[in-house]
Length: 309
Image (cartoon, rainbow, N blue to C red; front, top):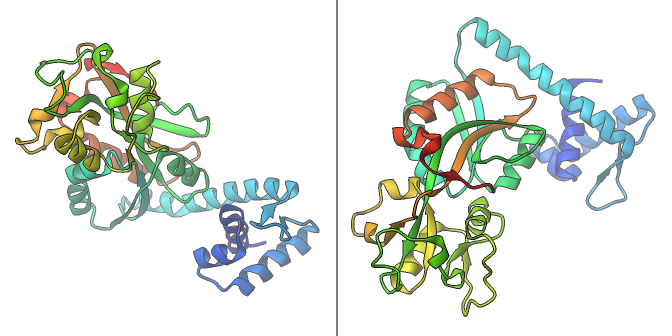
């Protein structure tokens, strides 16, 4: 049994499709199928139920593939050990980042990181929290940047900074003239929200506690904070914004920003990895580079009240 064959097994288990697995491994489907069949004959077990759509991994297959993932992870540590001994900083790092962080956080550090480490390739995906976790567990990502705590046993969290929530409020709103907003004064039926799946949506609803949206006359849910801001500016109501999105905001738009009364709600942003992660040196360098370019006041955990997802 070879490492390549193990990679094929893991790919089919990940994609639940022989065709997609072959594509991800850059081989033809007949080649991949033949190699998997050889493994099954060698072990004298059926690893995949091909009659199901999508393809299902058998109970025995689950155990075999879990061990295959461990073997492949350990094999990947060999070049990392050699690079560390040679003091080389190079390789490819696959990063997942949530949409409410990506446009505001990436510009702060990504150019400097690439300039400082020219032999490192960053592959960045803007995806939702659940997909980041799933891809980390499937070894399709090396690291995620998102909001914590997650309470996932297989995930290791490295908190980096803390950003407050702000209210972005229409000038037509009756509370617009107030300097600070008391949460109890807000009518949740006037709020514009992100779509299901965004952790920022979950945190927003957690801030609002027991308040409900059933009385809303119009409910529009977007995948973009920028869309929500435009609606607030042109129409009515309000939305919540994370602090990073407000720092370089145009002066003409800052009039819509309203802080909460103390203690202000806040979210924890972390770098996360799978518990058995590799590429530790590259991940540590990424962690340090991000923290070095974050506005210093965002590093203070005691500025507000952390809201869970």
